Length: 132
Image (cartoon, rainbow, N blue to C red):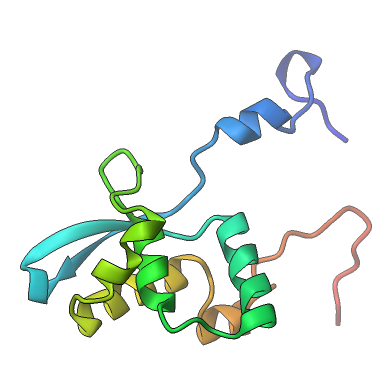
């Protein structure tokens, strides 16, 4: 393992990792709302909880509004909606909510294309041999 400058580790500390804002954001124009909003990808825990809940209960009928409430954020990355707003957001345009959630799923690597590309950008580890 190589050392960083001043003999320090080249790897980030736990605190440095926790301090990172590593979520991807994207501005999405919502035609039916005549506005642009900012959405983010899912966190690891949000994604994990989704899978656990689906395995236990199946996909909930309010899945799209619930996800949209989690990922619509302001310019500082803070949520604009609470989980309790899902029912009201579910009364809005399907096309609008679907666009928001599909953007989030793409940002989160949860599309068929992302699944097909998984591992293509992996980093080699020392001792890995190239395949022929």
